[in-house]
Image: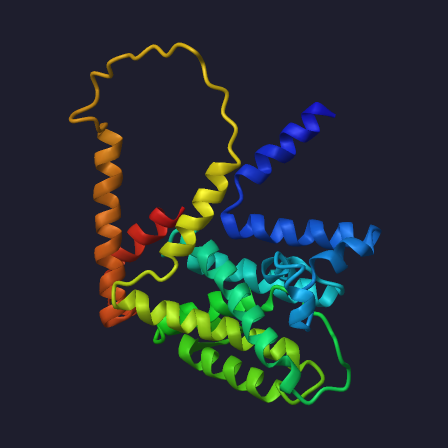
Length: 281
């Protein structure tokens, strides 16, 4: 049993951050099959009066799925987006966009759900669609002329972005208008994030600092009464050779990303594309 748990732990450690998000979504779905009341605790209410007593649902709803198809579609798209996104950007930025996309979708849903034509009243919001939309539209807006292969033909990302936007706008007047509102919130967040990043502004940094502070608060480290300090002769000015290499690599990545924002992904040389791919690993 110990060996099995260790094997699972090692496999999870090798997953990238968005693949770990997929695992969390699947686990919550499985738990929900056994204990349905847990999911109702996590879903976002449509009424603001109910939301204010369940504020955590502004994020947790993005991990709740009631149907296999809903879960599978979101997680498959998230899996493919992870491969593309993490070859170019950091894990922290991926999480920033995922969570901010969920929050943006929830806010739009809470503000405008009551104004939609709908057949059912008081339907709660669930699903990772707003978060996944945010990541997808971010890529479409950041490198619009990047082409991806779909079955037997290539298509530019900005075409996909426009198609997604059109579908969500039309869906506002269908049976899932509330879901479409959340999708549009994710679309809006992804677009704004990408456009600001091309100007050198990472709008997710504030959210990232808040999350880092929360994580740090819940870290309980056992402190030793005595601490022995050993001088590390391999350090220069307090930095190791690995620190300098990491700094240089990050600077090179920044230069390449700046080139993408100005001239598009296709303007990169083969060596630059290879460097980004290896850095993403």
